[in-house]
Length: 212
Image (tube, rainbow, N blue to C red):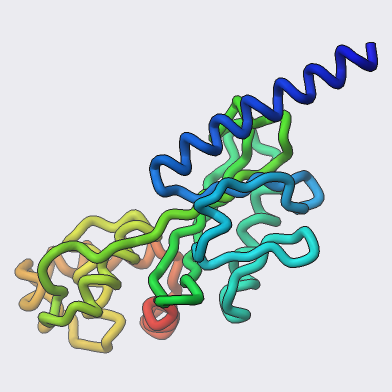
């Protein structure tokens, strides 16, 4: 029985490592965490500069200001006992070039069933690249931020543009004109933006965007 258990463990680990290597080919970092939030395995992409590091067996964001949000996402997934736990997302930044990296924390039993024997949580890391062209006000910084808010909060292109304009404190009429939509449409989109981001008011929205 002991030999059988050992063989099953070895075979399971080989299968898990195979799946992690597949994610490597997609330039996606992957970190498997145990139920105590300890790092069990990670692929090569995650070991590169993907905005996180392993400290004393725990996954940490490179920048202290992002560590709390990452730890909160992991803890939220661990505490979620629903049949289909939600995927929790946060943004970290690479230590070298400061590029934004989307960290998606999910339950292994829902996102990667083949990895379920490895632990409780998988953290997927994907570098975000700015779309070609310019942002809402013609700057490349806005293009990068638009990519971030679209991916992080699930905004449409129009909502992402409007989100950045609102975060700058511009009047709704000006935001609508710059986004190329009517005032009524802008107001409807703004409600969706606040709902998707969870921001309670302009100040909270501006603070979220400022961290990108």
